[in-house]
Length: 360
Image (cartoon, rainbow, N blue to C red; front, top):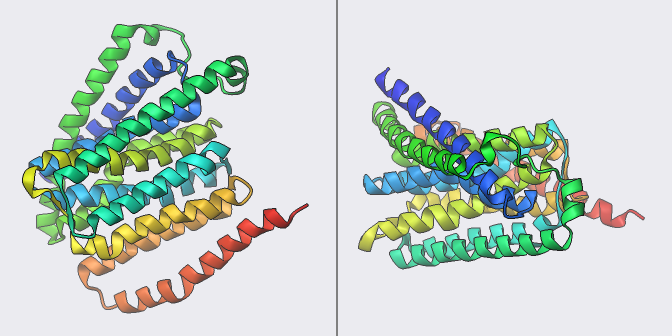
């Protein structure tokens, strides 16, 4: 019972902290003329991913690197399959051309880079420095690109995308914005410590490894701010923020969370578990690759594609549970997924991409 209360308190702290941080940072950023899409890719994405950062860094400081790795990989899988899937079920998501042309390839490149760096089953401090430097460069590039575009077409952009953080009320004051950011960060730190402690207790009580806990319970818990942000954005019709939040969060998780975690891990670096290298990181890569045909099929994530994403996330979690318990059904389940469901899905996605191209 004590562990459950600690887990719930930690989760509440993470969600509250992310909400305060996103509010303060969004208002601060929008005042500098950054577009809603880039706000989704940066401020909202980084703010909602801050629980992953706090948990991963906290886990590394506690010597539990499996949680740090599992948290990032599991969160990225959840972001694409579950969050995009649920958002598309609420309303079909029209995908901005910039996401197809620029952001999805960057997300795919970051995922491939992580795979290459992890081949030796270790992320060194040098690897972390490179990842974090790329994160900073990507952020600066996006902000400069957005400010240039906003300056060139400020009136049209304001009319087409009224900013939720537009100036009105007490939130416009700089001291209030800074206070929201500071309080959000404090809640995130406290919440992450509680969540990691509770998750470790769960793992010991259930005999489940830190890696599986990181890939499932912690990944889901730290992704709750992304879930809330994207679903709320979808309900309000702010589709750029809904999709941009997911893509930006995945890039930040790889470059920022793992980059900083590797940097502070010292000479030993982060050990990448064999299970992650042999399976989970490939699932993350496959989910990222699936975005390309889905986004290209009419530049829209349809409801049936959202349902497909959600179904695959359920299948992934089912596999993790069966594998963790060494269930007798695991071989048959793996055969069905690899031999039937995946090929059928790939054929369906290819047809979906080719159909718009053949239309007059």
